Image (cartoon, rainbow, N blue to C red; front, side, top):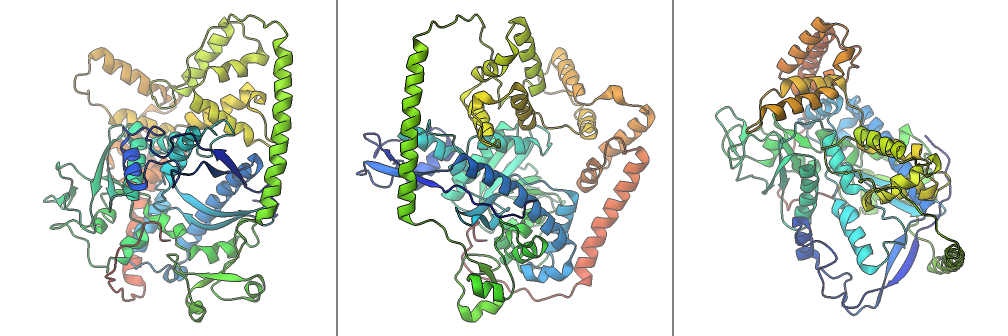
Length: 603
């Protein structure tokens, strides 16, 4: 990881002339989409706050700064996960986070089993002199996904600046769909989306629900407060929805800090009124984001991060005490959760954090903007001259037919199959090697083209999209749309989904079996008897924690005997952690707080 601070290009504030009649229109987003309707009802459909404005401003992110942001995000996520692992293994740090003791067994099991996250959001400060600084990591119930992935691109197109550069949120929805795919849940799995109230929570949940539906899942939106009136318990204590369907997978807008602050540690219910905490702490329910995500979202992680990665360029120095370094640099005091201002007399109860300037002086921004406008004018004039020169030459004829674009949202064709067809097409039409990349690019949809533009801008140094090689393009597409499959998981899925679907013909059933067998790599099996016993064991174990532990073992190392020993160790470990935490730690009183529920962004 980098530990050298580097200056970055500043953000640029640019102006745009608004189109006539912008004050009363809904045409700039698809109103038939449920999340758009809720967004318009809450925020209004105007492009800007005042219908009388003739111009407005927006921010441009230089490609080098955008690349630096992506690098910082990747590095910081890895660092926060490592810091979370350190916290999980260091019980002495747990009291600093303010969670009740009952939280930790669930969080530890969630982290070490490897429960996956869907999304998260970093809050950054960006200045040319100090670079990129991380304020916090909203790993639990992060919002603003719709604004990033849908609203800003639609707004840019409506005001006519969609061709100025590449939308920073391009591919956001496709990545969310892929994140749901990577959970490896069976298609058709029912997922309940829980929200506390209307407004921002609702359109955010509907946008995420839309991505899950495109990944092949059945989704239901459920609204409720601390109690969920539509949910009930069955005789065995399992939670059912209003259609008496089991609640097994839940995505929620409540942050864990809010849930835990409203829970006084009493036993979970298995009958009567179902509460949100009963759902989220149930052993029979898998929650997104997972329980361990509350740890990196809590600001108590920041001093741990400072100790583990001192002087990292993207981290603000943080301490539990006001050190000489902080006195010299200046600091702010932040609570462990929330954004409330802390008076100086209470400074010993919170953590001081180094301050950072937010923006440059306005005069410098204006000068920089003027220089960029002059440079763009020169580039435009040069481009016009080049086009005029090119039009004076006869255009060569082409006989290459069109090739269909790759469908990002459909599971009907794998990326590997599409690429094989494309290579066949190239060979059949005698396309020169130096033109293969351009033929591929002209065959793709606008969304795919923008994704590849984004890839080109992230190269070092940044490239034009037409300078990408076919190998760079296909490698990127493979990484995005052909994630590596885990052979053991694919074989378990193959043998578990053995029922014939309603209305499915014999030929359709046979075709589905052939397609599922492709990803199982059956020809590589060297010991059929051990493979058969291992598969039967994993299909029958009926323990999600054990399965997740088994899926972490390499296929080449996972024998029948190894599967048995891993299963025994996992069941013993989860039981031991729960017992030691419940009875070995000193219990501290937890007082119930009667207050208005905090926003899911109060971190």
